[in-house]
Image: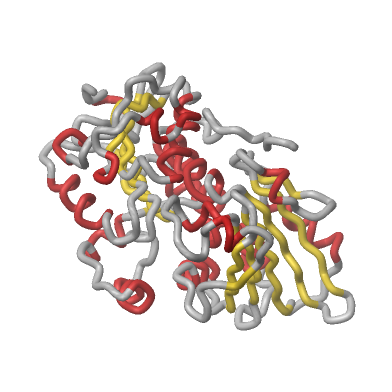
Length: 357
């Protein structure tokens, strides 16, 4: 686990290896990070930490990873060990990254990259954490130092970044669907409604009354109203005040966001689809399709499928996006950010093709 020194962001890493650790590695996003990192040609996973599973073999918790990481055990969370690594992914529950990030940044001589998958550093206004999470942010002085990690919108800022806040799954799908129209000044920002559904894995690996199989199977329900915690994040990215309604769908993975807004200029469906294609022309993980997005089409991939229509009766925009909530909505996008930070091609080690059927 020796530090690679010259391979940090700021210069090309060449043929070097970037040592990687995952904190909170026993949850779904941690397991997905492990799956994706196994095939990465530059990032080498050498440390997985998780208090609740410390001492357990990774393969005993996730048999799907047994052949990839034979003998790898979860270790207790220890910043002293993490200081030897080049890149750290934090897959902790919301509220737990703040103290650890402060600790890591206080270590003398450490210049690694931290990518936080929780909400702890996504919002720029510390007051929002008290409103939406019910807690005072303990590292608010660091909020402005984090780059928001949605590559398709903030690619330039991610190059060489040391501190990255990976977006939430719902904000990723919603922003990808709506941002091109916001950027062109085409939408009434006070009229945006987002109707989105997520697979059960979006709730994490801990079972509860909502995600228990007997309750979730054959069911489709609204949750998190009227104040889902992703709402201020969506507002922040879009510069709007949205109405956001999340749903729980009886599937393991996937998000489908259907977004509505009044248009300030008349357009037809052909024009809106063309606008999406032009905006994302240089984005390797965006597929703008003629048909309608399916969550199963992006299963296991870091891709997003988009399309848009205009209702000719009302003149209202309907923009849709499907992603895998654990890949593009979490772990895959975090690796995409890391690739950019370390000056690698952003698709390095990441699947573009979904698993079907």
